[in-house]
Image (cartoon, rainbow, N blue to C red):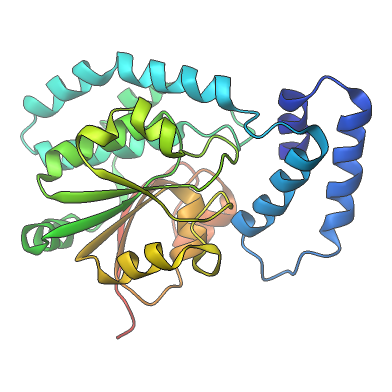
Amino acid sequence: MSQALRAGRMASDDNKQIKKILDEVGDLIKEIPMENTPAESGALVYKKIRDITGVIDPYKKLKKQSIKEAQSLYFEMKNIIKNSKEPLLTAIRIAIAGNVVDFGMNKKFSLTEDVKHILVQNFAILDYKEFQYQLNNAQNILYIGDNAGESVFDKILIEELGKKVTYVVREIPVINDVVYQDAVDSGLDTVAEIISSGTTAPGTILRLCSDDFIQRFYQADMVISKGQGNYEGLSGVNRSIFFLLKAKCPVIAKDIGVQENDIILQYKKGYD
């Protein structure tokens, strides 16, 4: 409900429209199955906002601002990696630091301060050796993006991976999640092939994704998943995935087995 109100206020200054958004999102709650992930519920909420206001991308201005702010840190971050004893691990840290750029969460953040903190923060889960091993043996990598702005930090990690990468974005704007144009604005088209997952949800829900994405997902040598929305949709899927994220809410932290605000590089192996 708080997300609906925030997005509604960004999309419209008409109080009657905002009241209608809250009324109809409230009505949705009784229809949403308890088994739905937050990302699946989010897809329904943001469709309501689009339908009522006619605004496709309420967060467009904020996304552009966050990309610009992240780009202002780009060369400083590249220099930190260059002078690091473990450049790849430092690039992973920086990519996770970008995960704080999340306007769906009802929390304030300072990108510069959060980056500084995460550069020295201990990992709650660090499956780095497995990451190195699989990276060394991978020919192609599927990298599933999360938020715009954060996408600039994804570019930094992709440059460090040194492999062929396909970068995955959302099909349509939802919250501040990265879509094709956001990825291009972040410079990702210079380091990766950009594709859409086909989903309208703020996360990767396979049953909502395109056949092309699903095929690529299962055929990739290595999958990197960024952020909570993608974790919500993919943590139970039968394929090996590396999850990079900051645990920004108690529900996700509990599910992973860490504390809120912990940073994670977690490898989940497929069942087979």
